[in-house]
Amino acid sequence: MNRLRKYIERMADGRELRVAYAMAVMALPDPRPRAQWREDALFSAADELLTDPGLKAIFKAAIERGFAIVPKSG
Image (cartoon, rainbow, N blue to C red; front, side):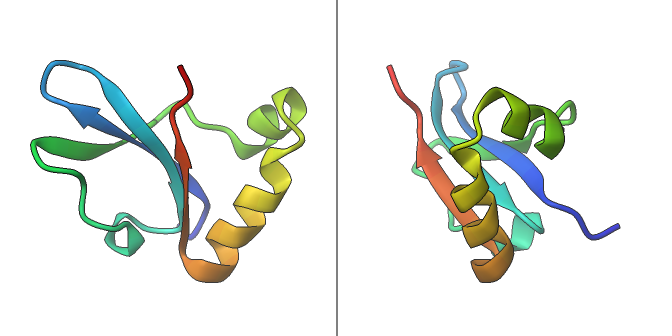
C-alpha cells in the first residue's frame, strides 16, 4: 500500500531526535550515528492535520520529494 508514513529517529536510550514523513522507509536519509528510524504504527495523516494544519506543507513536500524531516522541538 502506497501511503504517507511517519518515522521517528530514535537513539538506543529512547531519545527522539527527528520526525520524518515519507512514502517509504527507503526514501529516508541515513539516521544519525547510533540512531534508527522507527515507523509510528499509530500515525494517521488526517488526525495529525486536524491537530496541526501547518503540517499540510510538510506532507506535500514529503509526497513530492519522497520524504520531509521535522526537527524535534524541546
